[in-house]
Length: 390
Image 1 (cartoon, rainbow, N blue to C red):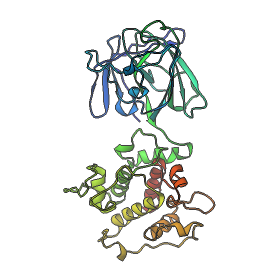
Image 2: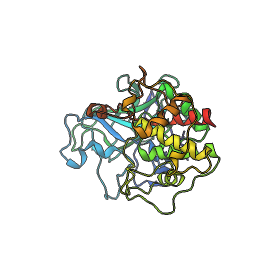
Image 3: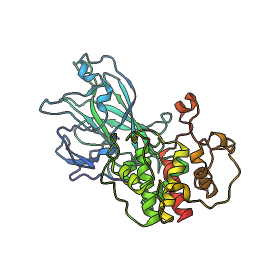
Image 4: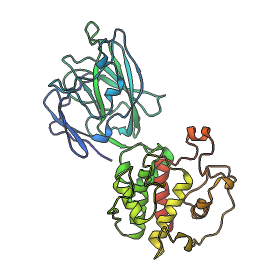
């Protein structure tokens, strides 16, 4: 969980009105984006707390004819507007325009302001801000416009709630110009945490306490499918916990498609050897039988002296064989022992109706992500590994 602190934060609240911000030419380091707001206050926001996807955009009427200001995708990521004119791209909402943005992090009510809207240009137009966690129930959290920074959620949302979506609606205060409506460069959460499902809350918190969350997943949307590179990071964390040994990366990178440090550690430990032809496919999604197999290798590497990936067939697992899953025939032969080892130790369970869902078997299942492991599932599995097998 990362909080945002301002060094000279000026907050102006009047009749429920919170003001819009303007920032240009910010600086960044590994974790934060630093900027100065319209009032001269020095601010900083986590780099991974900025909007990452456009959910929808409906331009207002009238709207601008300038093509550089019509693409909603320019509102994603860090602010890039430059006061020197090096980059003047931003989104003109148009009079009454509505922009909905999605975040990988969950925004919550914390210290001081919780959302920052980077509105640029000479004029500062009024905009209504609302938040949601499901794109169905929305909470209006204030109108923004003026000269100071941020939106405070305090008193406007249910206590303890978090949000992954922000909606900006132009209030038609600027209509008769070449750029009617607010001009949006970026939107950031200020107080953010990882986004996860209700069922995963306790195990995600336990994963934090046990240091099982790799850097690649900190403050991310944990409900999304996990990639092979991200799961390599989870596997390394589990190995380090079970073995009480720090994993070191391979000195020579065997892969041509990634130099990810966690992938090189996982390879060096011996829990993965890629997909062949010097490829790892770091961004490919992980399925459930792959998840079971990699973590079984972690267990063997941490607890069976002399085990290597090459000698794996010589090392047997001891467990009481559970009843076969209804889709047992769909489990790959190389994964079967790992799947049932994990099931026997209550680490990876089925998905209901005695079904394991080892891998996607049809294009329809692929499209739905039927057998894909999610980030939060991977962390829950990691916690159970440490809890049940250490």
